[in-house]
Length: 274
Image 1 (spheres, rainbow, N blue to C red):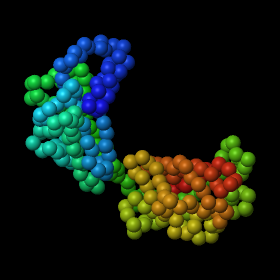
Image 2 (tube, rainbow, N blue to C red; image 1 turned 180 degrees about the vertical axis):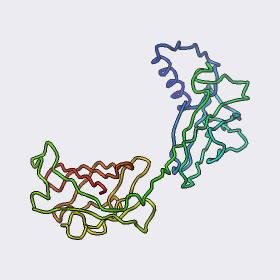
Image 3 (tube, rainbow, N blue to C red; image 1 turned 60 degrees about the horizontal axis):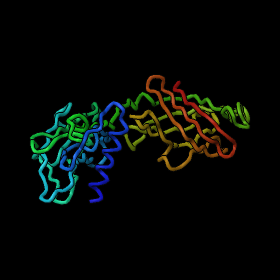
Image 4 (cartoon, rainbow, N blue to C red; image 1 turned 30 degrees about the horizontal axis):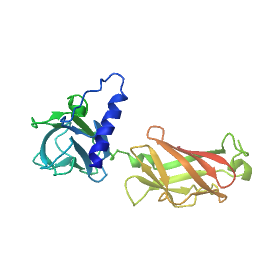
């Protein structure tokens, strides 16, 4: 019962907060069906996503079956349950769920948009407050998490540009200049996957990264992590780099990162393929 009254209170507050929507007179016998959300998202690699279907009523003694249909931008890449297009809201309850499971196929494709509609339930009004306008349908976007990268193009030698960042006490100082060193890195393919390269210090140059340091590209966000992401890379045999931002470019073959270098202040680095 608390769920029912809280739901009705939520609807009243929602409608009263929209200046361009006239709050309807719900009455005591105004029952309606709606989706909880007009839109939502999930990532392809996530587990099953629930699409809530709500029944707004003062009572539900017998339970009701809600028929739904859906369309999608592509015909496959996901499954929908119940497969028969009928979701049951049990007696005494006011909510049930459509379950969507995405196929994590490892193949780069476009996002998928599934549009759910409540249909064939002629005994009930549809949408928020039964007005047939809001949350009659619900769009679920499945975000593609398999983004391509031509990892072989990142193999080669890299220059190192580094400095303590603006605003720190060591602003403008470089490790190379301070220690009288020069840095260059060589990147090779890793055996651990198609998104990882291994950095070693180039022959004849000083140590900047520990030999064997890996970089794994997070391709959909154009970020990267050092090693497994849980350890900090040591720079120039001097201090650990507590990095907070990373970014890479497919076109220019650059990797850039900012963060704190030990206790010595903000620091930034850029690796550029030669």
